[in-house]
Image (cartoon, rainbow, N blue to C red; front, side, top):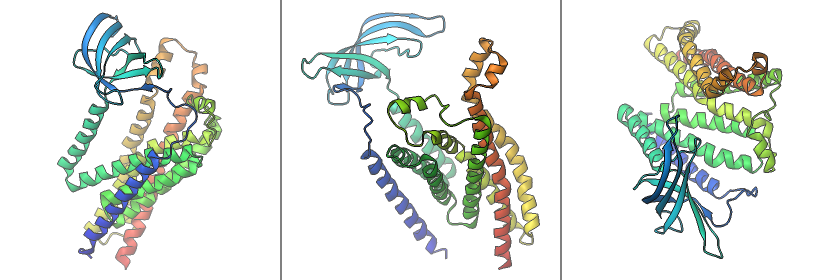
Length: 378
């Protein structure tokens, strides 16, 4: 059996890699036009600042620079690569990009197709290089600390990213039902990720089953709590923009999809940890029966859930922290605040995801104890 494992793993990774290539190609060639494409002649090339002609900026009391700069910029990418242009840079509180000589910036460049006149302004810092470097650093860190296991974890991260960006989003824009699609792809993400990390082992299958049950519980609690809180999915601010561009496919389901994606990792962590514990206990003491394995798994689960639930709730609350601070500073009436739709949405996020994670623990413990008891019986 051991001689077959490398070939099994190799086939698995080859098939998953080929599927990712197919998903990327599909995502790149399945754009749906909703009439919001950029104007003709508009591009966002990367540019390097060659000279600062005028600098009329001052330091605001908040610590940010405000004002205007006039720049000479060399365009480094796009169809205008190598071109030297004049660009304006307006520094505001929401977009304070202070340009310096030699710095790389993203430029909004608009050129009239007939007259040849152009308008260029600073759009943002060039962050793509740093993003790629940070991602590579994370992968290198995983490999350096955990070796092959770290490399498999990185592989699962890439797979998850590809599924969401190049398969889930394009299919939703093409009219597929978002909730069912996200639920199905979540199961695929869980299965591929756990097999990549843990291999074709019993504890892997126990983890997949436990996580899937957790997702089912999440869906149940989401719809029950959503009904109790009168949250339809249309309460989300960005939904109005989708209505304006005439995208009307499953709008009420998008909040369900967003929370499921955000909480999937936490549910998976709980299931993996418990299945691994039960597997180790079974190997260490083959005499343990179903009752003892389940009790031991739940004992570990209680300690784990206490911190994990707090972490998940704090993560969701953290996304709303600035708004809460604003409400505090403006002395918003408590009754008005507690009944706001966005507060109810944060409660829905935190509770439905935490409930799924909490109930995932006993489900995984039951399945794990049953599987390893059956194995020892055979």
